[in-house]
Length: 530
Image (cartoon, rainbow, N blue to C red; front, top):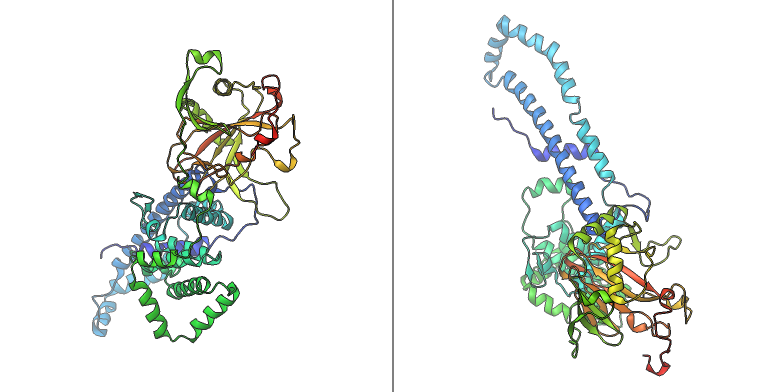
C-alpha cells in the first residue's frame, strides 16, 4: 500500500500541541516592534524562516512515524479473509493462531506506547520559543495603521493594492484573502466604511485558495459573514454621505434595522447587484464623497507647484578644502534657505552607519505619558562611538555648513518601516523656546539619506509647499531659526511613508551656541518675518 501522510492533518496535530493562539502580553514600549523599521521586519522574516524550518523538521518526523504505522497496517491487514469461513480457516492454522496471540499480547502495548509518544519534542519546543517572539496585537495594529497611512497618503485603491499594484508599478505579489479581510475589518472599526467596503469586496472576489477547506479548519473561514459585512459597510457609507445631518450612531442603528428587516433573498440580491458592478464604477461612485487631500498628502504625492529660479552649482566657498573638492549643491528654496547636497555620503560610510542598528530602540514623537500608548515613528540610535568614519562625516558637515561642531555631539541614525513616518514637527519646540541665544536651540538641521528608495519616503515642508525626494548619499540642509535666533515656523516638516525601499537617515542638529562667533550680529527685522 502506498505510504502517505496528510500534511494538513499533521498541522492540525501541531496546532493542538503548541496551543490555539498566543495570548496578548501586557503592553511594553520597549518590546520588539517589527513593523516600525526594515531592521525589525528583517528580524521577523528571519523568525518566519526559523518557524518554517522547524515545521519542516517536525512534519518529516510525523511523516516517518506515519510511514512506520503504515508498515504495521500493511503487515497485519486481514483484507484477504473477508468471509466468516475464511477467517475460521485462518485461525484454525496453529501458526496463524500463535502469531495472532503473540502480536496482540506482546506487540500491541508497544505499538500503543509508540503512538502515544510525542515526536519532535525539540522542534515543538523551538516552535513554542518562536511563537513567544511573534508580533503582539499592538504591533499588528501599528502595521494596519501603516498600511492605512500608505493607502490614504498616496490615494491608492484596494483593487490595485490587493493585486500588487503600487502607483504605476506592478509587482509579482498579491494579498491573500485573509490580508484583505484584516484590512477591511480594521477600517470598519476605525469608521472608514468606504475603504472597508472596498477591502471586503476584494476579499469576496478573491480566487479560492488551494486546500481552502482544510486551511479554514485551522485558520477559520474568512467568508463567514463577509458578504453581510460588505453590505453593512456599503449601506453605512451611503447613509452617512447621503444625509450629513445623521449622527454616526443613527446611521449604525438604521443600518442594523435595515439588515434585520431584509429577507435573506433580498440581502443576497443586493450584494449580487453590488458585485456585478465593475471595481472602477464602484470606486468612482464612492470616492466622489472623499474629502479633499490635505497639504501633507498633496506634498507626499509630489503635487506641490514646481519652483523656479533655482539652480544647481558647485559649492567651493564654504571652507578652504572645497576649493580642491567642491560639493554638488541643488537649491531647493531661498527663504527659508533649503539646499540639497548630492553624493556626500559614501557606501562604505553607510555600511558603518547601518551597524548602529544593533543599538536601535523604538523611537517616539512625544514624551512618555502614563497609561498612553505612544505612536512609534521609527527605530533609532544615537551614534556616539568615536570612529574615523564618524569624524569624516563631522568634517563634511562643517564643509557643507561652515559651522563649528564638537566631536562629542550626537548623530541620530533612524530606520523606518511599514508606513511609519515622523509627523509634522519643528526641530525646535515653540512652547519651550526662549527667544534669543538659547543653549539647545537647533540653528540648522542636516539630514543625510542613507537608504535606497524607489517610491515614497519624501521629506516635505507643508507650510511652504516643498517636497524633497530622497536620493541615497545626498544631504538636505535647512535653517530652523531666523538670524536673531527666533524660531522660523515655516520650517515645519515631515516625512512621507515609504512605498518601496528602505529609508535610512542620519541627522545632525547644528546648535546655536557654538556658532555665536560665526553668525552675523545684525538681527533680522520683525517686518521681514512671516
